[in-house]
Image 1 (cartoon, one colour):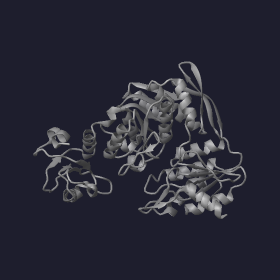
Image 2: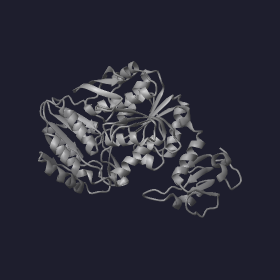
Image 3: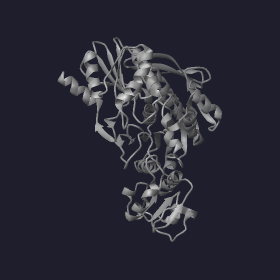
Image 4: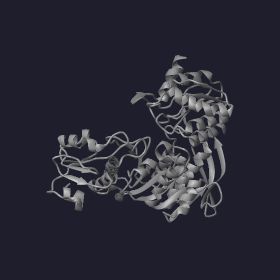
Length: 478
């Protein structure tokens, strides 16, 4: 692409061909535009010279850099790379209908439920999120992605791939980090979905108000919205009025789409959706009251997109479980092992309450908390697990650069307040071994926190740690 088309009136040098965009100097190719981004661990401005050495034709920067290629200075390089990526890839998100899902819990499940409903309507659907990026059954790969929402450049690359694959709709998880850091700048959403807001990511946002406001930004970018009106932050978003056409969902009063007559078993959940005075029976193969909220959010989005209730019912019924979300591990034992991604106070409370609704024996909860993340939720999660579980095992999650024993002790402070029975086993593999040996007939073990992850981060190193594999290895050795 010619530099004049990419940069427009910012161009102050002879026109040249731009072969691509990069923000990592190690991935710069000849003819690339290199964008200097200030991160939390380093500053891209330090690597401008390295980018030029690798072939960068132009540098985009906020601060002065001393290089022998043209430099375009901008006020906000994060927002600039988003705009450049949209232009370079010919604004791919305008070529399909885009649905964004934000909130603390439920995002991944809702994206798959929406996908199932739209596929029941005969649509070609892409998904971008925590588990994987897919279109139909095809997994799409990018150079690198963030845990939830890709960075602006990779996001537009993904969108372009999805256009090439024939996507008519794309459903994506939109994290608070992505909204705050302009990763979705330049995207326009046909529908935004808000699930709930509970304590998480305060290491980044500092306050719950900042966290809520970051989530609310999605509704400045969408034509229509769906919010969980039972949640205080959902009511705030609806009343703020950034999106005029918002469908309120919930179990309580004031909702246009209400879930009623809920029946939960280990096999799934049956309920009714009341819409405009008509009750529609629904069934989903995921147990738990929180699954009803997820299904109602997905159904609400489908309604906002013009999908009829019969198609919504078929889509929810046909939806399979999501990897790492209330996932039952095949153990061939007389007790049950469930893997769930719950890593926030609300997420942990939801999964334990869900399992208590159908467990015939004890509920044994094994969990930890991530290092280098919000430490204020650790004691809170300890108290929740101790209060709601029959027995708890406190262990490591992804300790990263923190001392795992220190993290475990902080969790224990809340556990002691609950009065619940527990043990401390810092090594997560040994903690799982203990749980499998401790369980009796009809017990349910919840392995919380890792979910779809197949690794554990210790220091700066990612080590193989797939709990499905580990459970089977331990059972084979007993």
